[in-house]
Length: 314
Length: 314
Picture 1 (cartoon, rainbow over the protein chains, first blue to last red):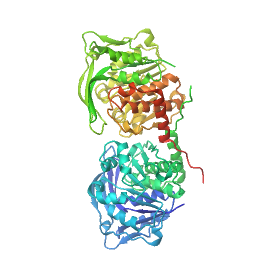
Picture 2 (picture 1 turned 180 degrees about the vertical axis):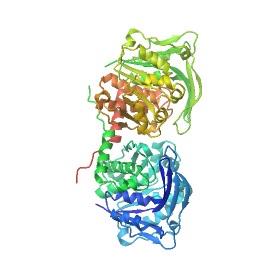
Picture 3 (picture 1 turned 120 degrees about the vertical axis):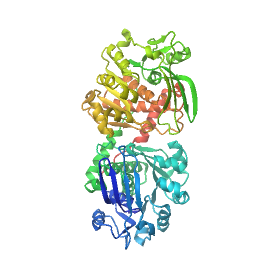
């Protein structure tokens, strides 16, 4: 089992969907990621909150074995807040308000233990901050990056700098096409793979995810792999699905410390499984009651969903 | 091998996409369906064209072994024409013009050979016509139905009547939600399965398709199966993708005459494979050069795209 470091937001979210709403609930990319990854490996969070951040939220993460010693509590600051809503199709959040608060001033400083983590996830924050963290690391075995349309449009040069130095980019369909300036998914993927990463995980929302590899990436060839998403009956809030996916994906890779083709495929499935749980309730509510047995059951459900045998020759 | 009957449109399409355009090209649901299905089994077409319909188009179908003796050529009539265009995302056609022509007056009358076909596909036409064909059949082993938003909204009562008498409905995401009046895909599927069919094939466009079964359908349990779509580099024209999918799916079922779970899964994969070829060129151009070896290769590509093994217990 290898350690996993994440830098990203720890936030208080106010979210409304057709199925309910929450106010100042525990959220943030690093929160969903580390909670999901904690089912697989040891996780350390780098980030910042204000001194209004409820102690019980820190306890939740600590109880999952997450190291929060590098989650700075900035005195006189407030915690990052995001307010958003979703319509009936639940496909895209409409952001109503963002208050950076503690994140506006945040300068990550990694201690010696944190620098040595062999697996790194740069969750969706300012690419300048992502680069500051990456530069302090001792050559991780695998560095993965998330981003969003806001940075692709607004901080493209910084984003390309960090993209050139990571192994895996996690991104959604719209974003990969925007980043590549190319409407065809396959051609967009190929183009983004020339920008640095060895692999690209494209998240298709309710349709799953596809991993594309650069030729010879990780010494494992170049065939893409597509994981389905499970059809879910109760989708209450999609917030955090992508970060929970990343937590399952990188958490499993770190736990097994194995970048073989077979294991990367399994990792994508674990990512899809963790995303499928996250959306069933608001905030990290569903993850809080989750068991490893439920995760393994859903992995078997995934297998049954896609398994087929070729016909025997007539 | 069992025979397969299709009723649907044989048309002249004028289509423009960002990658080219065609005028009065061979199109229509029964055309794509029968051409695709002809790679698997013997197909008979029921429909009508005008006497402006080019003889070489009939020859194309005859050369694939398609029986066009019940494709009526109505004197003094023109062939059904559809004019449409697609934007860069290629997701949805914008219909610019429809001229029913020969189809406005068409009354299907099935001869004794056609009535006995054990497999039936009611392609996307007026549900009143679909019902007229279904009522003339000698209890087919499998009757499948396609439809679209136009009939769901405009002829719901007729559609529900025919839906109550078929085994399989093929439909896309938007349509199944519209038909069920329910935004969640899984709940929408369950609701539509109470309307008659034993199985529901939901086409997700570039993300593949999922088959949902009613409890105990075909004596094969109730677990859904999701086929991916292959990421395709050159998508020129999505017209006919759904009908080519149906041709692969039902064509393979008819060829094997086997409704087991394993075979239904393979059939969905063959459907997805045929759809993936259809979109690579305009009209039936790509299907015209297609070989069975290419079909089988793409089926192996599909398998490699989704195959994964569960981890061994630690």
